[in-house]
Length: 184
Image 1 (tube, rainbow, N blue to C red):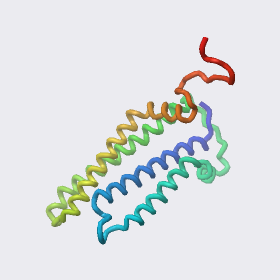
Image 2 (cartoon, helix red, strand yellow):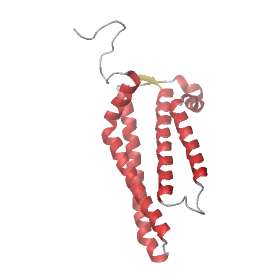
Image 3 (cartoon, rainbow, N blue to C red):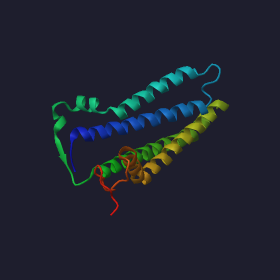
Image 4 (tube, rainbow, N blue to C red):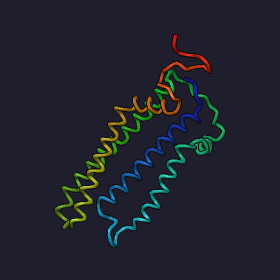
């Protein structure tokens, strides 16, 4: 495969957009499940507005990564990168790396959460809201681990699905020229 450094950076920006969208979703879910939107808590309208802005930025980064990549690369934009790895395999590797990122951060946060649970209960008298928020945090870290494992183990299928959505045919299927039939 022969590609430009610009294309590789666009892939990395899109991965960042997915990470941004997932983190926003997980944080809003954790705040809602923890009861933070009750009387005297966070304003649901403020949270919805901030989450909407975050999702909009993630969507824009997904759809238009090129301006940010061009800004980051400057004159090196057209530098060529050659590799025996094809585009589908590169996307598969990128999604697997993102999945491992979720697994590792989920495990590290879950370990910290466990230590905080063990140490914090001796020093702090917890209210019901604090207990509920801690449980939701632990569940959120578990969801990160499960999502990461799903990405690592299912990234080939996801790449094939994205290819089918983008090109209207299965990955590796022969390309039909205009007016040509594949039946022989």
